[in-house]
Amino acid sequence: MIITISIVLILTSALMVLLVLLHKGKGGGLSDLFGGGISSSLGGSSVVERNLDRFTIGTGVIWFASIIALGLLLKHGHHG
Image (cartoon, rainbow, N blue to C red):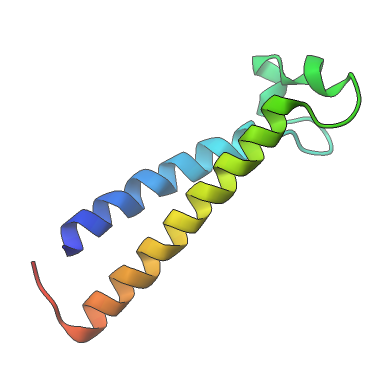
């Protein structure tokens, strides 16, 4: 169980880094390199940006839950 949660944690951590880098910051971000500057210059937040936000929040919740679960498992000494 600990190994499974650790793998989920590693995968979601890497995904979080990528998703945060894809977000458009105030000064432009890496999303500009992938054509993100075109959609955001039209004003408002695009559908792609809103979906990216939802996906990032979802990944963050899974990431946070896996940290809590791993912490509880390690604290109570369950191995496996």
